[in-house]
Image (cartoon, rainbow, N blue to C red; front, side):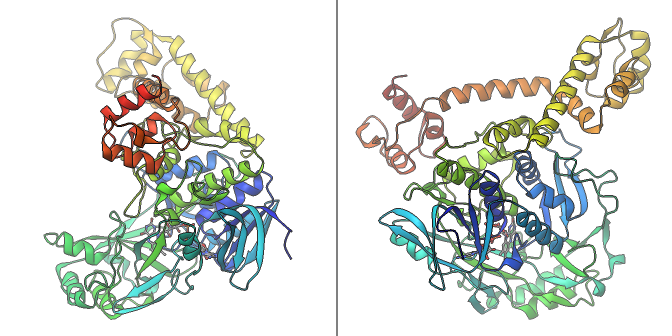
Length: 623
Ligand code: FAD
């Protein structure tokens, strides 16, 4: 039925588990994906969308390394938008609206085509541990499956409890049962666990809505895509979303239900996502606001089901229904499914190393919502990293860690394991110190070669990245060396309210001026010919423009990052005993002993560890 022993078992086929299984298998490890329902692989539990601010950058990073989320997002997209296009490129964030059913189908088909990957549908009810030595997993039917490494990606399923109004029942997601057994085994083995909560809005029948009362939100006129590979193409047609608002009347109806709300009557104790609050939370916390925006999002190309973004709620279904009927355009609304909240177990991520391996049990990895994060992209990138490291461990190879200045993935993991999280953690651009370096356009420059060397990113991906790098830096050099006369330049400068030149100058310098764009530069003699002769596509032109316009910022951030990396290189020995450093504050000693940072740089990011404590530590390390 199974291999006598797998290299890697991945428990859970959500966003984290799917990436973990793909990565481990693609790196040559004999892998088994055990999940409760094979029909629901990479199911989008909440909003039918991928990417967005900071999350879009993560998806590009996953793709750059050879993960599948970007490719699947492209092939199941129904609308594309580059968010923040009016701001600097460090803020540009790709986002797609997805066809929910296609997304899950395309993930499953990709996984089925992945070599070295077996599947099994069952609930894992526990781990086989001999002492703290991991031997495999135990299923709810009593099967024992052996493995050298195990990646747990249980999402919201561990002891999941669903709430709708004053009703609650066990479940991992609407219509799916909760997973039991694993939490107990882990707590018995010495792990600390906690509870978190999240919620989702109702889904409604699009045929019952009056879109003429809403504002249309179309996709980009010239859509782009996530994957750096040519395998996927930008959308040729798109579906629109719509926007509408709640009103004081809607708020009054919702308030009437508060006493039956599990959020307010104390039934839900755990903390929910701060940046994705329920509608009842919003009207309670922002009582002065008389309306809140709602986005009406189609769930796919063909389905009539619609997702009501911004109306996440666990109020009784009759209250949800009555309130929504008072929203403009929803007067005749019919429900497909009510909104609900869910509480679940998570494991504080300070119990993990940078590889996402647990500190307590060798070969055991955690990825996704089990680590206290929220969001598909956050889950997927952790899955990728855990899958890679689980495979490397089995192959007895060096671990793979991404630094904070290399990727949002590095920021996310470092934040989690260094600071922990007491509320569902989601990624923001503001969490990254080096935003100008961590752009969506250069994720391949940052990560593809590293992944290729691991044996994950393909030859084709590596070749594409090299070609893009060569062509864009060739074009930058051309612009640095090529001059334009003031006679040729001045009409273009004047048209853009840019001061005229008195003599000729290098195009690179003129291009650095704020009002001058690539379209202007193309009018300078010789530039268009260079573009045509070298076959430079939009991606290369955009890349070149960013490299020219932001060269100052990029150099400055690189410099700062290099300084930080010097501290990163000052390693701290494993199991270092901080209690012996009496000149350090008690709080610092306690925190450092708990987190066990691997470098001085990581130590400096732990809350409660002061610059003074770091100076003491540096002296201790002989610096
Ligand atoms: P999941 O996608 O939950 O996948 C877990 C998988 O593991 C499932 O396939 C399950 O069947 C399987 N599994 C679990 N336990 C076992 C077991 N013991 N044995 C075998 N298989 C097992 N994110 C946001 O960003 N914003 C939101 O507003 C938001 N709202 C949400 C609302 C709800 C109601 C839910 C359920 C989720 C919400 N999320 C939201 C979270 C988002 O869905 C998750 O962050 C993301 O799906 C996590 O991915 P994951 O892979 O960690 O887990």
